[in-house]
Image (tube, rainbow over all chains, first blue to last red; front, side, top):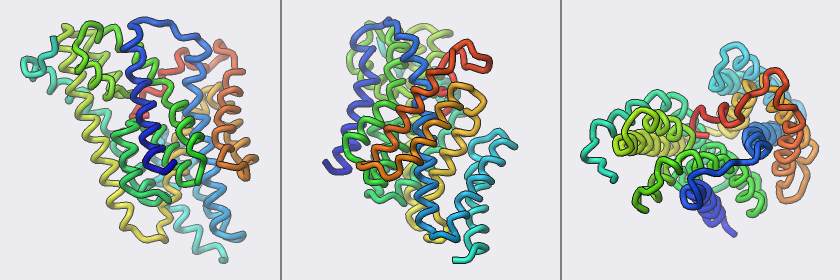
Amino acid sequence: MNTWIIIMAAGLGSYLFRLSMIILTSRIAMPPYLERASGLVTPAAFAALAAAGVAAACSGLGITQAAAPLVAVAAAIMAVLRTGSSQAAILAGMPALWVAIPLLPS
Amino acid sequence: MISLRAYRSDVAAGARTMAPWLAGVVPFGLVIGVSAAHADIPTVAGWLTGPLIYAGSAQVATIGMLDAGAAPVVVVASALIINIRLIFYSATMARYWRGTPWWWRLVAAYLLVDPSVAVGLNGYRRLSRGRAHAHYFGGAVLLWVSWLAAIGAGATVGAGLPAWLHLEFVMPLFLVGEAVPKLANPAQRRAIFAAAAVALLALSAPLQLGIALATAVGVTAGLTVRPDEPGHSPHPLQPTVEVLR
């Protein structure tokens, strides 16, 4: 299965989700645990992708420079906590990465 | 009866109601576009997640997992699990679209995503049914156009930028930024820490199954928090109705 088919399959499935209850019924009670679980999927998936992404960035930079992405993540976390804005993570994290990489021995 | 022409002022009002949402949606679209340009997939394919999947979180997961070389089934399943909330939105809007023509339900359902639900409900709770349809359509179409334009702009600009910028790190930082505010909610906090820990432990898992496994473990861990625990969100869909998740 190539990239295009994967994206089309995910798109078709998403569209069927959108259409599902409109076609099937107008009122259906979802089990409470399913509603709770749906609110947890995105944070869990994002955390997993973030952890894997940071680990990949660290391993791609070599042993000594591997700390640079961690510095960037720390700056991002502090910026978000300070400003309350998610977008501050990129605004603080990327410059921290650009500064940290040349400062660390390669 | 759907008559967008007769309710042109409501189409415009829906677009105006949607406008403030774009402040959050457009940067998110730009980040996805930049990530698509730097991922190990055709840039057009990354952009195509916009019109086809049309839900930011699932697009992020799809691009990220394709870039990481995950198995096709894992990629599709992950995107659909993230998008399962669309079933709830579908159920929410179904009552308002009962008795409308098929073409309307097919188009309106396609445009269904977090901000369009919020703007749509705003109209359906105040206006007559016909006017509310126009209100929903105006907001939803503006959102759709803005989203695709933002991803396209991000992909175009991102592809021409130098490697030393390490733009591949934009997405992990974006995800960190999205996760940090959710730490205030006990269930989401537990889900985030459990998922991150399992993702790191399962880095060498075959077919990139580690991400899917970590997500499942995170959700399970989050469900162990009792709903009546202090700080728990009274409705799990509430926090997700922010931007084009």
